[in-house]
Length: 202
Image 1 (cartoon, rainbow, N blue to C red):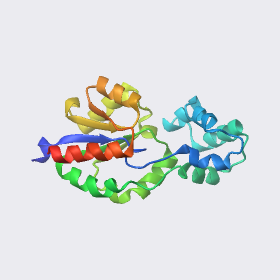
Image 2: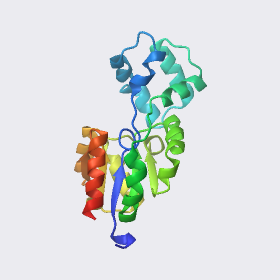
Image 3: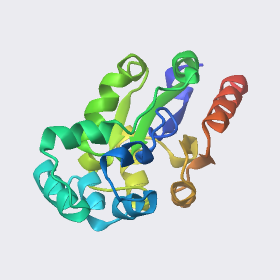
Image 4: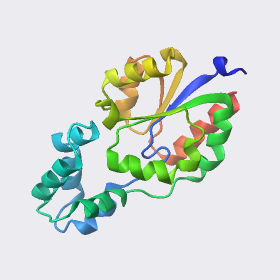
């Protein structure tokens, strides 16, 4: 198969290539429940941070105010990256195989601090990817349909040739509206199953 004939896979990063759990940082936030933390993560402040509309100084101020904490910037940076676990085994084994058959990209709702972490953590994996799209650079977040159109334009691809893997159903639904072949992968086991199918398909 020539490069021009290859289809495209666009991966979400969190809980697809690199698992994470925000609950891992609750030890540092006495009296804060998982629900409280997740409510904040869906608040306008964190949304703005993942869109690159506010910087870390504003984030720190708003975080400390909301949770009545006294973190400095370095401590909050460290805490933010404690959410990540080790990448699953299929990343190292299957991504190189997929790269022989597909053009690989990533599209993630993510912030500057998390990008620093996962670019280093998965540095041996990114060599197989042609580009990584991060929401804080694009000033857009999934599930906005606009973000998919922007990625299409950047990679110069027809939407029907794009296979998209994401763990969040709302992102899958909006990608389908954009014409992508979107596959919901709610667990790491399902990610692995779908990657096996994509390898076997070719």
